[in-house]
Image 1 (tube, helix red, strand yellow):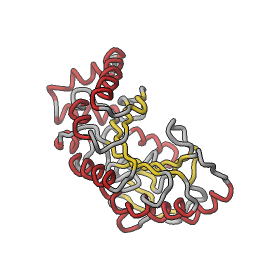
Image 2: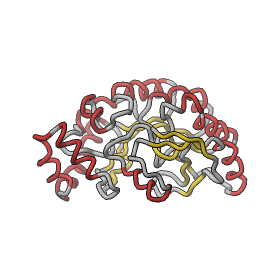
Image 3: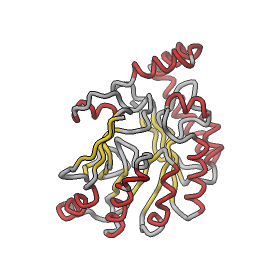
Length: 269
């Protein structure tokens, strides 16, 4: 893992995602190394030659730069800042550098509305801050409850069981929670099983189809052939089948009604 400290000139970016107006990425790259991750496209712009999951830049001046950004950009009550869109704000190294924590402290001082998305139960460390925000939600990504499948596709991320426990604890502290079921992996993502496991511990969910347009397809193919060769053919067929993804949309709506968990959005690629 190639890790380096960097200083940036700005950290608050206009978001292209439908659920947020701005995003903050405390890091460049990601330590989780998820096989399916679309965010690997950033390497084209950052100049990194390492494989996705093998490099990380730490924005050590993130909090001080954010203060400057907030003076230039006047956010209103409807603006939502997402942490994060192309990295995970709670990577293992966050325990040492606390970049996300310091950024949250700045956002709290200004009472900026925030949305957190992570795969890590390290997020529990900052419950004391979350409870002080007037508008805060915390989501955890869950694509499967099978820990072996998770280990293959999300090799260095905390297992699903720890993410579910984190959602439960966040909910118990009165924090708005959501589950992000994305990307949905054909043959591996059991939607009914996931809905059952998150019932009562999330306020709503978002779901997303698998995006294979960002340089991740070769890695996915290799992972399937090495670990699930009997599933590979079916997986490849379903990924490119419009009817399959239409069916997923219908299933999400049905389960949303059955488990009384609002479906905030289903995003297709």
